[in-house]
Each structure stands twice: as structure tokens, then as C-alpha cells.
Length: 249
Image (tube, rainbow, N blue to C red; front, side, top):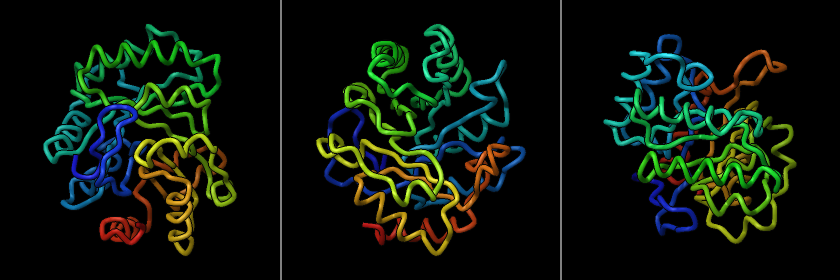
């Protein structure tokens, strides 16, 4: 990958730069412009999540297959969205989803969304990650905690999502001290409701807190009724130019 070169947990690269981890756009039929935009040359992408229907769906979707294929042909890492439901889904259900993503869409890894963050959930997540690395060589594994988990999770995944939420919380957020033991490429921040005038401030927070993979959008969840990640941010061109030219560095 041109921006994120680490493929093994705990290994730091010398040329890591801030880039996007896209949590997942709407279906390609609903958001064709969004998916096309991701293949624009020079867009600083670390990876893009494919979420067909709260996971891989029940059968291959030709539109999603085409969108994923275009990204992979452009050298972009595609991750399958697998929901762990904070540990409520069984090991078999999670691994079955992963197998379908591999068989149908040839994904490069997985985002384990709604991942447990407490110490009690660690053994099962560790078991899952170990299995995913067996069924997909060099799988890129991102644990979607959305908050700072206990430090043990960093031993198994390539990246951890240590913040996912609204700008109103992010601007006052604090980083866990243990994250200083790891390079910025290990951490991801997803923030919605970021006003355009505060974009540079949001980028500074990510830099101060040591997160190299980010996704900021001005869209909001509207009280949970809509998914803020599905449309393209209104200031997409602006944030691409800021990150692509190294302004945020």
C-alpha cells in the first residue's frame, strides 16, 4: 500500500502518513459517485470497508463485487465488515461471514465492528483473529472498538478503532496513555458531525492523539436514524487535498 505499509501487528513503517479508513459507503447502486471517487488517483486511502447488508449478505452481489474489484485493481485494500455485536455473535457466525466475504469478494482483510473492549472479551476476539489469519494469508485486521480497549487487543490486530462517534465528544476526548507505546499507524478515528470550519482542528487532534488512519464527515447520525458514513463528506475535496499534500502532518 502506498501510505500504510505495515502488515504485521507491532511493526512500524518509516513513511506512514495520515490517510483514510472509509467505514463503508452506501450500496454502489445508491452511492455510485462515492465509490467512483475512491478510485481517483492520489486519494490517500489506507483501506475501504465493504458492507453489503450488515455483513456479506446471503448471496454474492454483482454491484458490490464490481465496486470491490475496481478498488483492488486500483491498489486499494478492501476489508469485509463483520459485526461481532460486542461478543454476542458466536465464533461460528463471525467466521462464516468472513468466509463469505473471501469467497465472494476476495477481500484483503476484515473490520470486526462493535468489537468488545474489555478484558473478558479478549480471549474470544484473539481466537477469532487467529482464525481469520489462517483463512486469509496477510489479512489486515481492524478491531472496531470505537473506544480505547484494554491494551491486550493491540497484540493481535493490525489496527484498533479507538474513537468512533460525534465531533461534540471527539473535540474533548483524551487518549489512553498506553497507546504511546505504539506507532500512529496502529490507530483509527472515525468522527461524524465535524463542521467544515473545524476540520483542521480535528486533524490536529488525530495527530496529537497518534491516529494515522482517520475518517471525518460533516454528516450526522440524526439520532441514530441514518448512517453518517454512507454519503461522501461535503468537504471531501478539501480534506483530500489537506491530507494528500501533507498539510495535516
